[in-house]
Amino acid sequence: MAKFKKDGGRATPAINTSALPDIVFMLLFFFMVATKMRDKEMKVKTQLPTATEVEKLEKKSRLHYIFVGPPLNPEFGTSPRVQLDDAFATVDDIQQYITLKNGEKDEKEVPFMTTSLKADKTVKMGIITDIKQELRQVNALKLSYTASKEVKD
Amino acid sequence: MGSRRRDIPEINAGSMADIAFLLLVFFLVTTTMDIPTGLQVALPPISEEPPEDSKQKKREVLEVLVNAADQLLVEGSPLTIDRLQQKTIDHLTNEGKDPTLSTTSTAAIVSLKNDRGTSYDMYVQVYNELTAAYNRVRDDYSMQEYGKSYKDLDPQRDKDKIKEVKKKYPRKLSEAEPVSIGSE
Image (tube, rainbow over all chains, first blue to last red; front, top):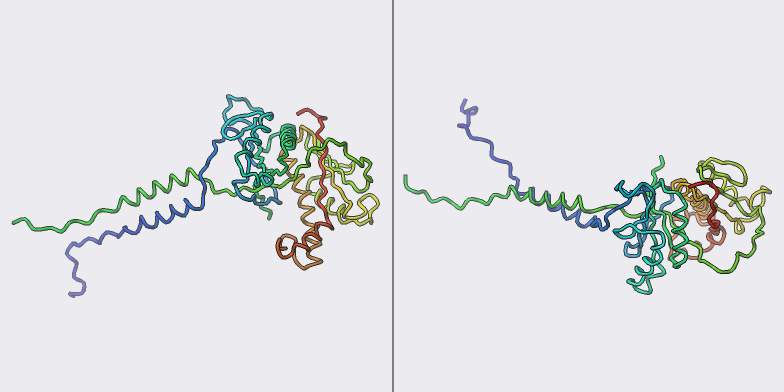
């Protein structure tokens, strides 16, 4: 009978949560290492097309970005616009932009610079063709049509 | 009832987790994890000289046209996008069998022409299919010759093999100068 004697109202001890911060910090460091800061503010919508034959782009430092798509803010209309860095631009600005960006780089790196063209699915080829012509003018011949990997089943 | 000496209480670390979570959420929101991927293209340099042999033997060229309504015309007849890859493979590996397709794989050319009104999505799909065709024939050739797919060839050790495959199936994908037929 003594076996089943009630413990005189002793509450269950609190669960020790002192290891919880450690776990969360571990997660935090994982995300800090595995991700990169979002550095550009998007002004145009770029819903990427999908493709099966995509290749990973080499070093991020060797990339120029050109964004093309309808503006996110409807005040700027719905026709596709070009975005370079954080601002709207026109197709004519591309030559100057690429030249300027290449100037900041090491001369040896310039031939390896790839232009990553992020264009919205709905954009027509006219503006893309114009951009390609501009890139040819400044001898930026490596181009990548940024597309997300299509999963085929 | 005198004042009983109490131990210094343990510092409450319960809110530490809250602070760490806050930081975690901040990093989750402000960072991206996507690795940029894309279809690689080498644009032709601009040359002042007019293109030379404009009367390329017609049978060597596989003409792919995409119009403003995103319709495909391959060698003068309409084709659906899912059959483009096979058609291109047939062209590249023809070796003179079919009189309308290429004579040798080294001479075979794919010519892609699009309209200014073609959608970018369609263009990327077509380009993807053509790239896939080249990758497939290279893979098959490499498999047959070296027992390894083209992707698995080591750029350092198998340099000669890669060169050989590239020589057998050179990537001759030419894009015509832009034209405008339909409206944008």
